[in-house]
Each structure stands twice: as structure tokens, then as C-alpha cells.
Length: 506
Ligand SMILES: *[C@@H]1O[C@H](CO)[C@@H](O)[C@H](O)[C@H]1NC(C)=O
Ligand SMILES: *[C@@H]1O[C@H](CO)[C@@H](O)[C@H](O)[C@H]1NC(C)=O
Ligand SMILES: *[C@@H]1O[C@H](CO)[C@@H](O)[C@H](O)[C@H]1NC(C)=O
Image (cartoon, rainbow, N blue to C red; front, side, top):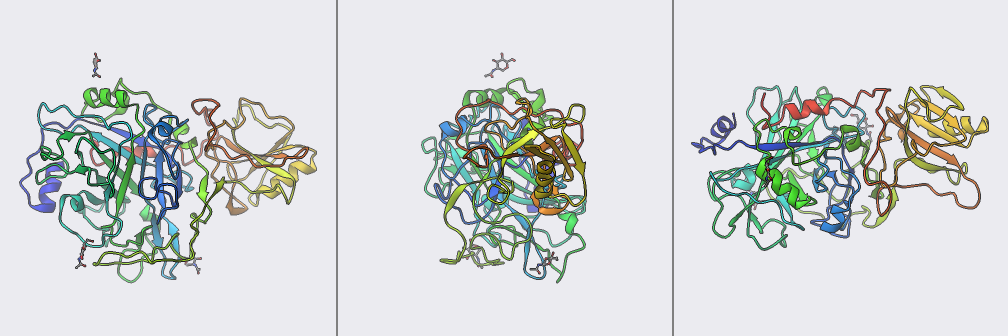
């Protein structure tokens, strides 16, 4: 199947490595979506919005040691605290506004995962190496707006699912009934010396052949590492009735409506010894990581509860008048040029969680995202459910009943009590997945299935919102999320994304 696609796309007579070994890791959730890129813009705000997966130590600046110390990951392998990111895709409306395109299966826009493949692509008998500690790299070029032909250009692809069309190297100008999948294959040949390089690419090379994804390494890049490949399946069909002007309406966050500027970033956060064992031993050609005894796994709910508060204070969800940052849409073919200035924020903020700040208006603070269970409610004092619920309404309801805790769940439910069981309380270091929009105000968040946005009446002098997940150094080492009995419609579909992956067996 892979050979066929290559042959159709480029007319090459492909020499396919007999080895088809790989393992596939599902990143069930998105860690955060914002303008950060510790590879290209360390310590600062980056040019455009990324969707970031992986370990919770992600930040504007981060070291390998910090990555290893992460408390959770939105990707499923526990020994991997790496970060993986790509630019956010937006729908551009005719009136000039933009809205993020959710990842397929991500009905309420609360998750947004991806799939990362680790592929043992080498010459017969070749010993592939794990990524060394501190390793990082970038694939693709955000400023590109035409097909430049080389292996790096061929490694960026789009699969238009259920369209019976071949993969393309640009965003297709026709509808994709099964969704649009962006794909990028990273270079695998390392110079053996540099963990990074000034342009974040030149310490790596694609193999010295006609193929970006197999073949022997060139002499200057002698160390053959395991290959990685990203897939992101966007729910473009939800915009199927919103096309206009005879062209596709999607644009990446870097102002790219062509797709040639799609790119991916990788920061190693692996337990390197475990990765090496997985590279050596996880060779089942089903790709099922669960068949690989070398690694252990987070559950999908644990992945989804691993969230980071944003540190860039600008709106990234919902309709935007322009792409965040300075990213005018430029369709090329000449290289895009970033405008020297614009009025976008360039200051990092304190962490911003997904809650309402009621400390001044009502004297209640956000406690965090706790858990709940239909078989044994966390808050049993008083409750209501309504289609016009907002955070304020729930807090007022509980306050009027004389309660000091208010919890919002599943978009429209409100529970009150005077005590919070520590077993159900928010976990330190875990922001949680309380990202279902409130029925009465879609700009607010009201818990989700099995998880509750908890607010507390302030007592004494301090009235501060809790923001989890950034710099805390103590606390429970891994997220604990109770089994969800109020089943949310968003919790089951990522498996479908995986099964239909590029390297998945049908
Ligand atoms: C632009 O159009 C979309 C629908 O296509 C609408 O939801 C949005 O509010 C509009 N934005 C502005 C600023 O008019
Ligand atoms: C690979 O798996 C075998 C059998 O389970 C085990 O004995 C060996 O230690 C593993 N080797 C490496 C390098 O991971
Ligand atoms: C195509 O893209 C390359 C790389 O960005 C650029 O150098 C070249 O000028 C572009 N070609 C045209 C015709 O603009």
C-alpha cells in the first residue's frame, strides 16, 4: 500500500525496505493550544498557534531533565514525556474571521489529539538508535508556499479520507468526506554530534536516497535513528456546507492556505533506555503498542486529563478576527514574510486556566477540575440541571443554599456541598479535562463527563484561583481519573482515528 502511493505520486520505482516494523502511539488529548515553541522561540512567545501533545513539562523553555520530570502526558506511553506539536488548522470564513478546526472525534473541542508513529526504517540488519537525551528537531518550513520538490517537501502530505484520491503535498481543493489528515515524516539520519542546530534541521538529514522514509544514511549523517511520523485527522467535514469562492477554506496558523508550510516539532522526553528497548523489540507489524512489553500505558482518560494552563494571554478558541500573532494569510508561491510588528501580545503571562475568575465579583475561587461519579456523587448537598447554566448561576445557586462548594459538570449540571472528598479533589500537577462548554454561555467551561469544575467560597484573607500543572514539584506522580459513568460523547472516538492511520493495517 505504501509503495503504491509513492509510485502513484512520484512515478518512482520504489525500493521498499522489507521491514515494516513500527509502533503507534495515540495522543488522546491535546496538552495545550497556544503560541509557544521552545525549539524556535525559547523563553518567548512564538509566531503562530501550535497544537501541542505530550508531557506536562512543556513550556516556553524546557530542558530534557524538566521533560523527564513531567507528571503526565496526553500521549499514552508512560515512559515517554516528549512533546510533539504542529500548527493549528483554522477555517477561514468569507467575512475574514477564523475558527480552529477540531480534530476528528473531538466533538466539543475539548481534546484534539494526534497519532505518533515510531518506525524501524533501516537497512536490513542495521541497528537503529533511540533519540539521545536532549535531542530535538523540526521538520517542514512554516514560510514555504510552493512545492520545492526535495525529500523535505515530499515528507509533508495530506490524505483526503473517503475521497478515493491520492495523497497530496498541498491542502486539497476538494472535500474530504472522512476528514483531512495532515502528515509529516521526520528525517532520521543524525550527524551524531549535535542535539539541535541553529535552524533546528541541519543536524538531521533524510536518508541518502530517493525516499524520505527509508534507505541508507548519508556519510555526514551516519547515525540512523528511529523514524517518527505524525498524523492529525481534522474534522473538516463539519465545514462542508461552508465552502465558497471555489477554493478550499482552511488555513494553518502560520497564515498558510497552501499546506506547503505545514511543519512538526519534536522535543525528546523519553526514558532513553526504554525507547531503545522499544526500538529493538517492539517490532510487531500490527503496530499495536499494547503488544509491546517494553512500555506501559496511560489510559485514554488519563491522557485527556493531562492539560496545561495557557501562558499566552490572547484568545485562541472560538471566532477570531485574525490569526493569533502576526500571520497575514499569504498564498505564495513566494516565501511568506512575517510583518515586522503588529499589535499581538509578546509577553508571557501567569498561567491562565479554563475557569471564570469570580474572586472579585463574588468572593469565590476556582479549586480545579475534580472527579465525579454517577454512582456516588462528590457533592450531595443540592443540585440542579438547566440549559441556561453558567458558572455564575451555579455559584449563586449553591451560595443561596448556604453551601461553600459549587461544581459544574457535563455542560449543564450544578452540584453543591460543604466538603470535598480528597479522593475526588483536583490532583496537583493535573489541570484536568473540564472543558465542556456551559449550555448557557459557550465561552465558559462547565466540567465534562465524569469531571467537575469546582469553585469554593473564599474564607479568610486569600482568595486565589488554583491553576494546576506548571511548576509544582510535589504531588502524585500520575493522574488518577475515576471511571466515567456519565459517558460523554467525546470519549470514545480516537481509536477510530488510530485504526485508519497511514501505517495501520486495514
Ligand atoms: C463571520 O462568519 C461566521 C459564520 O460564517 C460567523 O459565525 C461569525 O460571527 C462572523 N464574524 C464576524 C466578525 O462577522
Ligand atoms: C527484547 O526482548 C527480549 C525477550 O522479551 C528480552 O530478553 C530482551 O532483553 C529485550 N532486549 C532489548 C534490548 O530490549
Ligand atoms: C518557492 O519556495 C521557495 C522556498 O520558500 C522559494 O525560495 C522560492 O522563491 C519559491 N518560488 C517562487 C516562484 O516564488
